[in-house]
Length: 70
Image (tube, rainbow, N blue to C red; front, side, top):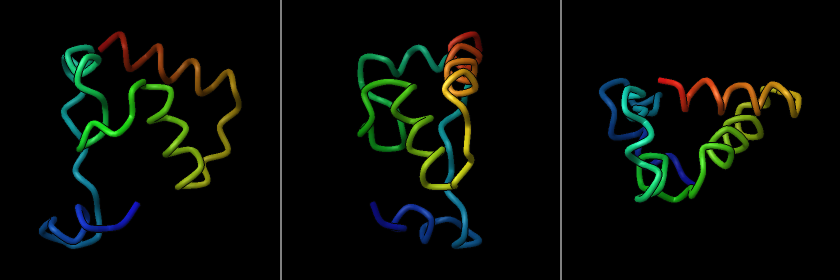
């Protein structure tokens, strides 16, 4: 993965995330800005490893369930 999307932002330092409301609507087309992840768990795992969040398995599961509730 590269920083192409981040370089397109006004500050050239951050990614724009998709709006979280109605997140379930993305389940058929994929998640992330380009649909590369097939599940929310895949997205959470990406951020966990990329940002070194050190989330436990239970925390990742809880986060996915929370996102699905929005």
